[in-house]
Image (cartoon, rainbow, N blue to C red; front, side):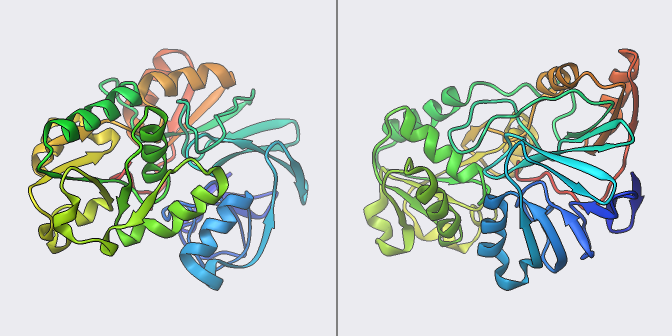
Length: 328
């Protein structure tokens, strides 16, 4: 593997993984926009990632796409690539790359929690493990998701004259939050900002577990008291949100463990729900894949590298650029 300006490059296979600039050949771990950018000539990804990229980018999502199934292996030049579930969002995968007997596992983004909207993370042994470290500090320990959702339901029940507006990332977080709400008995209509509808409808066609969801623009603001609206985080504090009555603002993100972020964003119902592994889960994953070497990328790299070296792993930071973590 080699770092280039376009991203992480596999020399013997002549392909990039999640490149930040258009390339001839790219392997895409999942459809979040910091990993799946348009205009690559050829991409290899899961079927769900292909579908979501097409929804987001139209025909510019790539020139040619090869869909691979979970646990399928393919050969690219002299390299064997196996696709494994990553548990991050719908369609997210890891790539196990084998060359001359060496097994390199690229996790992409991943989580270890149960999620009704995607397949769970699948560990496999490797020599080198490239892991994300979005929440790679010991302070990050995600609480049970259902406890966080119950906080939201309690707030809705205790503030019947208010309209609850929750900021969620459009792909993955929105649909997961809805699925948890439904699983613990919240059966009212959930209203969505228009930017969340297209992908949520795609998820609903896959799983049929969203219940009734509607575009919030289809109803009058006054009728939304004691109801729940989901929107992109950027819409929480703009003019769009000001038309609703007696707003209670919430935000679903792993970053809601940090009090300063809650205060900065003026959040009244912080929901610590993340689609990334927390500190303990990262360490558990390293233990599960039994690597000789761990390379750390996009996140709190230095702290995790230091800890892993203390645990006698060979470890270094990759220092890749172009990956965002703000909405996770």
